[in-house]
Image 1 (cartoon, rainbow, N blue to C red):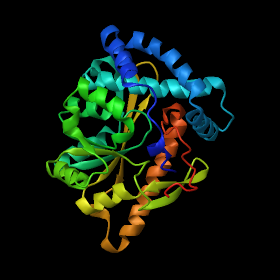
Image 2 (image 1 turned 90 degrees about the horizontal axis):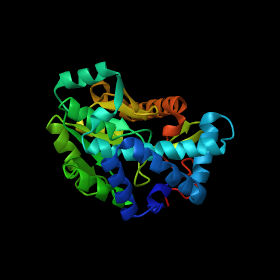
Image 3 (image 1 turned 30 degrees about the vertical axis):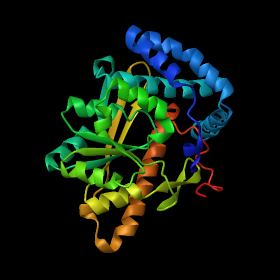
Length: 300
C-alpha cells in the first residue's frame, strides 16, 4: 500500500460537485443516478491511473481479467455511494433499505455504557454509520483525513453544518486527544484502517493474493485508551439497498501486557482477512483507486 492516495489530485470542480448534488437534492435520487452514467463514463475514459488500479484490483478479486462493464460498474458503484452520502447528510434515511448483521454486537457495546472504536475501510459506505447512529440515538464521531477531498467535504459541510462537529481531523496534533474526549463521553468513534499518513506501525499482511501494508495504529489506540474495536462495513447492494456488518475484532480487556504486540498483529490479520472476505462478497465496493499493493517507495 502506498501513500499515493495522498498524492492523487481531487478530480472535477467544486462547481460540478455542487451542480450534481443540487440536481440530486432537487429532482431526487433516481434522476441524479441517471446523471452519474455520463459522468462515470467520462472518468473511466480519462482517469488513466485510477482505471489501471481498478483493473488490477478487479483482476485479483474476480480471479479473471475484468471487462469494460466491470470497470464501469466499479466506477458507478463508487459514484452512487458518494452521491448517497449527501442524501444521508440531509437525514434522508427513508430513501434507503438498510439491513444490519451483527446487531447483537452493537447491543453488547451499548450495554457496556462506554465508547468503542468502529473500524471500517474504503469499502462501501462509511456515511451509513452516521445514519445508524442518528436512528439509534448514538453519538458517532468520524476520524477523517479531509485534505485529499476538500471540495467534496466543503459541499458536505454546506449541506449539513453539523458534520464539522462530529468529524475528528486526522493528522492534527490534537487528533488523539479528540478521540479520547469522545470515547470518555461514551461516544463511538469510527475510523478507517486501510490507509495511514506515515510509515510507523505498518505491517505487511496477505490481502487478495499478495502482501499489502496495513497500519496497526487503530489497535494501538484501542490499547492506549482501553476501548474495544468493532469491525464496521456498510456495503452497497444495488438499487437503494445497503447492508451493515458488525463484528468484534479486538478487546484490550482480554490482552495481557506481555502479549500486546502479538495481540495487535493477530487483530490486524483478522481485520484484513475480514476485508478480503467482504471484498469477495461485494467486489465493486472497494474504493481505493490507486495501486494498493505497490510498496516501492511507498513511504519515502
